[in-house]
Length: 403
Image 1 (tube, rainbow, N blue to C red):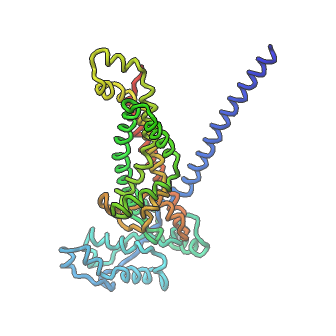
Image 2: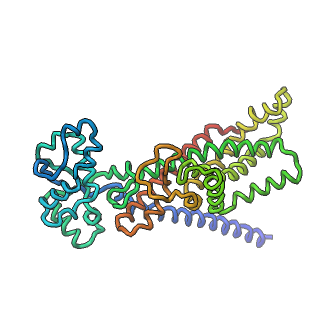
Image 3: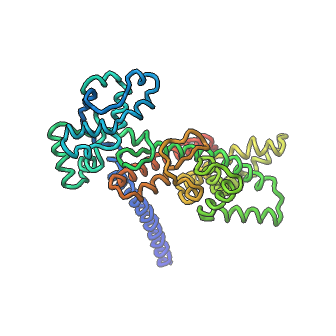
């Protein structure tokens, strides 16, 4: 008897140790991921800037100051600003000095003129982004030649590090010093909005019907089995479904948040239906009996008592479904959301991309500067995901009731 009790206690201790080991292993992988991403990606939010002296009266700028007041964007687009930047860099740093500055220097000069057109009459110093090599050298990841240039500029007091606001406010590009994440983030917001608007009400009503009203026969069983199987179907299949229905049949715009959201809604709905049915099933029958006993109709029982009590469980399933949808790439690639989009989408039907696809595209670039930009984009994706989950958990706790 004592041996049996001792073996039972030993088995319990082994079970606890295995559980603790599993938790620590999972936490270790999570910490490794976060530390790696933070180490590689934090510097992606900053950039090296060079103080470039521009002598506008002696520059080859092609600009009519009077026209600048009427249509500044068009005037500056035709003002030969790239040559102005190249000449200023060569004057300041010698032959080949234009390699020190990024292609985004033109944007910095343009913004300086828009902020103060009076600088066109004098020599001014403008902080412009450094080239990819100089930027990496300042961050300790560049080549020996670039680090020597960076040290020379640092000794002259011409280089500094600043917040890379363009990364937070810009869109995709070919130069890692000028790319931004806002276009993909806005595309993700629009796509997730469509996904939630479609999948949540349809999934909840489907769960209510199947659990409260559907007759118990073989057709209902077939539908339930199909929904359970759909929750485990690979996401690429939903991409093919969206390609076939929304693009080839309905001829909706390709690479649009509308189509992306509808495709992801197809993938998310089965998860919400399954979670919703389990939450509705968990409501005690006494709640229904009590409501019916005081004269409530069956519809009032469902919408006044069952659904509010099941809502926290439904929101939990919605969190899981939306988190999966936010991280999916395969179905969005099938509907063309991997295109090069250089400006943020203006609406649900404009060409757009999303954060996972943007990360996938940058990870495939050969430029060394894209490595830290990829990690920085992953940090943005994690923050976006945590924000969404935090809001959903807050709503779940707000509506949670105990009985």
